[in-house]
Image 1 (cartoon, helix red, strand yellow):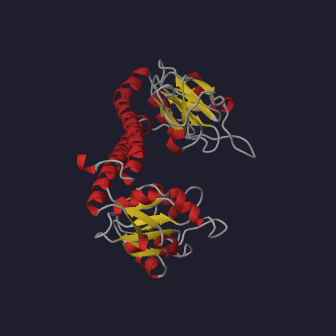
Image 2 (cartoon, helix red, strand yellow):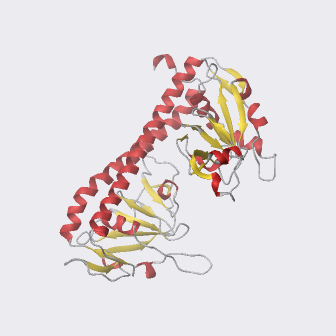
Image 3 (cartoon, one colour):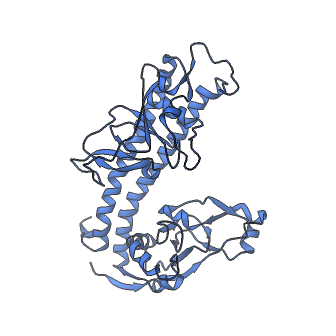
Length: 387
């Protein structure tokens, strides 16, 4: 497969940045037009934005319209944001920390350019490092940025292979989000709206139901040190996940060979984002600043405990740095229905979380496959005629 080098300005109709309407004027915000900031480039495909603006906000600012299919690059931003690349899946206006590329479709497949530029993340960051104290990309840098392109026919093939994988991951995430929202709605109907119970108001709960402390319905333990044997990616030997108090990838820190927690359980972050709660269906190792709760299945299920804690007000203690400790957390009060009610609820909820877990595992496999295929496809190592 032959490649030819082009600069971005040779394969685009327009390269531009945007702006921000005044945040002090309420009439500019909350309208019907999407407005994208650099932090939203964390997603590869951007369908909607956190904030929206009005026609008045557009007319009274330097924001610019990125059309559906345009490529956007974070030119600045905190942490790892600068250099991230996304594609607009709908029309949206952009701020000054984004650079938009309107591709010339006769020369380049926009999805192919998305994957090519995504693979150049480190290079994009390096060329911007000396531009200012914090580092930033400019439209001039992007215009002169070189990319290697095969024929448009091969671009289309490569883009389809990679985007099909990403769209499957995206679909699984959407299914998981819907199932999670449904499980929360069912919990609310069974144990909040139906009961009409509020701990602070001390209303009567149904016969047989009890108000109990957390440590009376589960075994609580604090995470330990990192295992001596550990890998960043899952291997045949190290296939047990290690979880921390982080929120990215539900706190996944790495992998090891021997689990510490064997039973279905719940983890709660004790530092950082205090109270961040996850359901764990498979054996794992928790490390420092993470509290594990293994339910007494003769009283509650892991799923019920998880949804209950999601709806609970979990607070840390301390003046300088807030933290959640077992001595304080164990006294948290929760409603414990009769075991018959818990089991009936779990018969409905458990299959949802099994499906969610299966989708997560499929996404992990697909992400690993994409990471293997991406460089090989972009370097011409795979014979596209055989696909």
